[in-house]
Length: 115
Length: 156
Image (cartoon, rainbow over all chains, first blue to last red; front, side, top):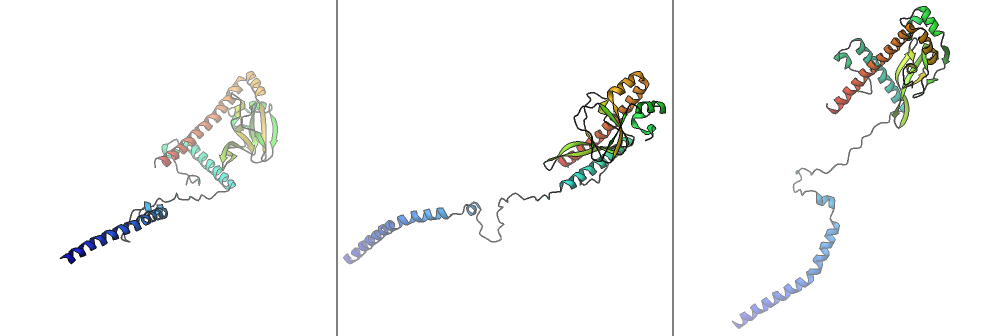
């Protein structure tokens, strides 16, 4: 019986010492690891919702505004198109004066500036 | 030019037309020459005998100011009617597109002639009113067509 009680006491003592030693050893490491993890977090990834299965739909990522490539028309070509447009519109307006109806007023044009 | 075909001379007898044209000065403009600039004082009316005149207004195109043609006039037609209508300022720029022959009629000389011959003054004024009225109606229709397109773009 005495031997048994001694063994139990020694066990509790050993566990207590181990726990204290473990606590003392790991308290600094946790702070260091937390600081390292914080510095390594990718904010873009962190902002994305978690996905577990590969088939989960990918989260919508804000796409950059589309780059619209507008071909620069030579000014001579543009002026020629404007002139053609004016001639066509003038002719359409004149035909309206000869036949003043809603249809002739809003007749279609072949002007490249409109289409 | 057959004087009877000129816009400005409609309704006048041959004798009246000849007398009126004799008041003018013949002036020739090579291709590209300017008859009058936008905004200048308008003291004369230009009767085109032959050739072609472009009437233009300035417009910003690709960051440059360009003269954009808004109307063309050729033989028998008149440009510069602002010379007869107050406030006597040209509201367009006129440039010869081809070699152009004109008869330039000075306002003061014309007005003095109209005071002596009121019947000629009445007919010429009526013809000018016809030219301006037609231009107004044409540009009214052109403006409305463009407005229609603006509305279709905004409210398809």
